[in-house]
Length: 211
Image 1 (cartoon, rainbow, N blue to C red):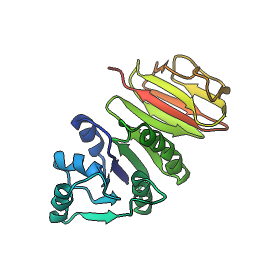
Image 2: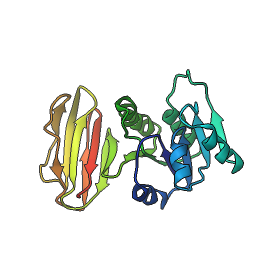
Image 3: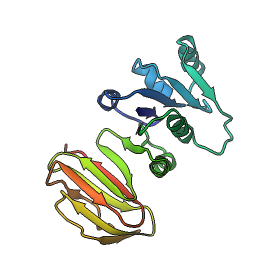
């Protein structure tokens, strides 16, 4: 089951339609409800402290009998993390975070790090943007793309060891990348599917679509 979490960043209508195709449950993270209302989408649930939506948005979904779960503003979890917990408890085996990258750099970074939490729950997770997909790799990851698409490997831990890649222009065979090294940036798809294997550490994997 795929859960789509709509966060309070930005995504185009095209990105939204692409992710909705195989979605089973739609979860809005607070301000993501604004985007959902603008696009005429009824989420299954809205979760958060509701500090980003006004009375108009709140009442709009209340009239549609959408489940709204409100939390105190002072809490130990971000709205997106609460949505992830709900998705996992609902039985999702795939979670897409849409609009997870925006003008708030701190929120963007924490949303990327939350992919690690999703991974630890045994669930497939990724962030979708208009031009890229973002993943976390701790063991093995296979990604489909177009020849010429750009793929970057960015360490999230001090060192990522035993990296082996296939289907990319610049290959790694049990290579290591240190935090602060840019050697893994801007690789290129030479096949329509690539794979990344990691023996130790955590990699952020960014697939930039061919424009």
